[in-house]
Image (cartoon, rainbow, N blue to C red):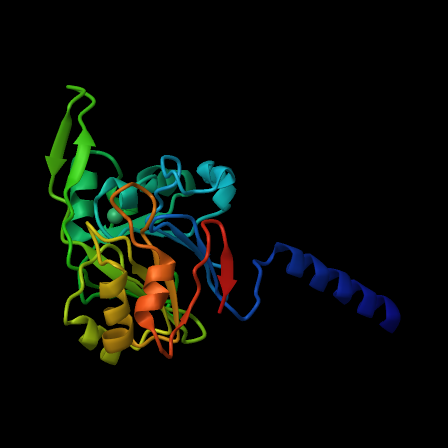
Length: 273
Ligand SMILES: [Zn+2]
């Protein structure tokens, strides 16, 4: 083999490897899919889906109501048991053979009821940090001020039953490049957000603003300016049903002069950080 043919061969090999490798942009991509549903592609191309309420979500763009449209999913995180968060989680877990991590009591009930096998529903709890995608991606569950009943239709009776769903949480994900996302789940305003801001120092928050079940825009602005002080914020959990009346415009207005850049994006939009 001549030197020239060696170069050509190695170029072809490189091209083949590149085609098979996941997109590696040096950045993370965050795609909001309505309500709390979020698809994240990490620096090394791992796909994490948080609160996959998709097929029944009136705000999810039509093309993402097909679970195959998400592509390969590596990990599912669920903040609490309510239907607008657990959503399509069990189906997505089985389809991708991907673990669904949520509050310990929720995953325990999913296993006990036979919704998921134990290997797809591992248990964790608030304050714990897990690394199921390798040591470079750290996922910590933190407190949320909310509730977490699991409503499950018993196939034997056809009736709804209410089961233990653990305690609700939020997730702080530290990515390969050190960037930290705090997905807050559903929560009221609570003063320990000050501790979360000081201790974990999130760069980006995904913050509920709809009111009624969660913070309204005024509460969310207080949490952002006084407690969390992130570089970036994406308002979520609004306009999905008639109770969630808060708007991104009200949130931005309530923030006033702030060091946080707000992205009032639409479901389906993607941002890179
Ligand atoms: Zn909710």
